[in-house]
Image (cartoon, rainbow, N blue to C red):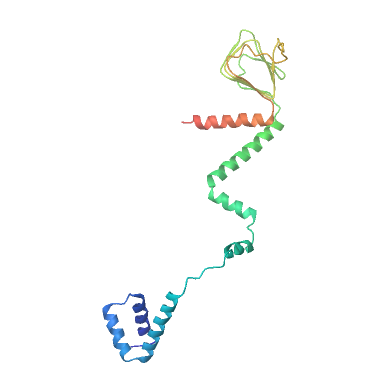
Amino acid sequence: MDCNKEALDLMHKHLDGDISREEEAQLINHLEGCMACQKHLHELKRTITLIQSTDKMSAPEGFANRVMQQLPVEKKHVRYMRWFKMHPVLTAAAIFFVFMFTGLISAWEQDSQLMVSNPENLIIEGHMVIVPEGVTVEGDLVVQNGNLKIDGTVNGNVTLINGKLVEDNGLDQNGLMANAAGVNGELKEVNRIFEWVWYHTQNVFKGIFSME
């Protein structure tokens, strides 16, 4: 038997408890005639015994905290990138809202053209939209970048974006704008940029959730 290879492998199997009966008999026969291997096996067993009898070592108190404090601080952009990779859906949603918000702000600042969602039978004079007397608008009416005067009826909600409602009766006795009697729905005025962004955001979500 080659003491440098076979006997050493058998000794390791013996110490690990993985040796077969045939291999164990082979090792015993070899050890009976090889004093060097007997000595080596004895030293291995002694080493294992010393290791097993040694008390469990523990790090000094506060050692882990001191090591962590000495480690280099992780850069913020690395931490943010890792968070983005762990939350891809939230990242995509955030990017979507950033682009949408930026686009809406740009449109608010640049777009001054009068737009009417339901212009049929309406009178448009410059930036004034008039619902004539005797005319009924079926459905919601949206007027952007213009004022609205209602002499007829709107069977729906009225939304004024960057404009106001003009009424003949003006202000009531408390100094407040009187309600438009011709509106059979909600009247909403959006004259601030954040109100306008919120209005379009609501419409986006309504469109998403109304899809079948």
